[in-house]
Image (cartoon, rainbow, N blue to C red; front, top):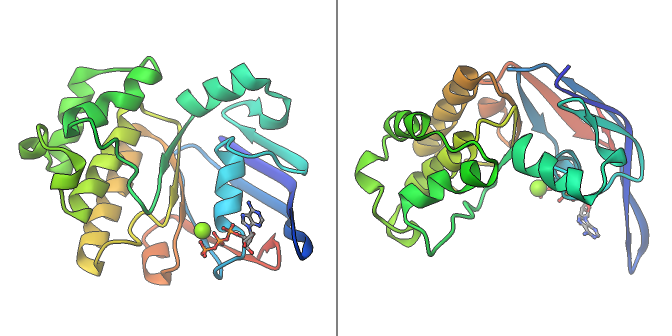
Length: 218
Ligand SMILES: Nc1ncnc2c1ncn2[C@@H]1O[C@H](COP(=O)(O)OP(=O)(O)OP(=O)(O)O)[C@@H](O)[C@H]1O
Ligand SMILES: [Mg+2]
C-alpha cells in the first residue's frame, strides 16, 4: 500500500469553539491508483490533502505514506518527505513568477535531487509547452499555467500526487485536456493520484471515487 490512513482526526479551534472536521478517516491507495475525493464545500477535502502532504499534523490516527509514518517524522525528515515523496497541484497554479517556464518545470526536481533533463524534455513535449519555455507565468493562459504546474510536479517523479481541484479554474474543455494529461502522466510514471474535485463527471475518469461526508469517508 502506497498510502494508508487509519482513524485520522483533525479539528480546528476557532472563535466559535472547536470544529471537528475529520472524525476518523480510513483510506488506502495503491501505487499507480487514481482516486477522486469528492464532498461538499467545507467537508474537509483540502484539510485531508494538507495532512497527507505533511503540511499540517493530524490530531490522532495514523498516516503512512511511502513507508513513512508521518506523525513520527522530525522536522528534517518531514521536509525530506515533502520534497521527495509527494507532489502537489493546486487550483491556483502557484508558479514562481520570477522564473520562466523551463526553470519552473525543473525547480522541484532540482530541490528533490532528481533533475532529469531527458525526462523534462519528454514531459514538455507531452504537455505541449515546447514553445512556451522562455515565457513567464503571467504570459500564459490558465490552461497553459496548469499544464506547466503539472509538469513541475511530475518532473520530480513523486510516488504520490495530491491535486486540489486542479481544473477548478479552467473551462470544461481545457479542464478535460489537463485532467487527461495528468492521468496519462501519472500512469506513465506509476504515481498514485489523489484528486479533489466537485465534478462527478471528472471523478468518473479516475479509477475510483471516495466521498467525504460528516467527517468520514462514505
Ligand atoms: N486553519 C483553519 N482554522 C479554522 N478552520 C478551518 C481552517 N482551515 C479550514 N477550516 C474549516 O474546516 C472546514 C473544512 O475546510 P476545507 O478547506 O478542508 O474544506 P473543503 O472540503 O476543501 O472545501 P472546498 O470544497 O470549499 O474547498 C471548513 O469549515 C473550514 O472553514
Ligand atoms: Mg478545498
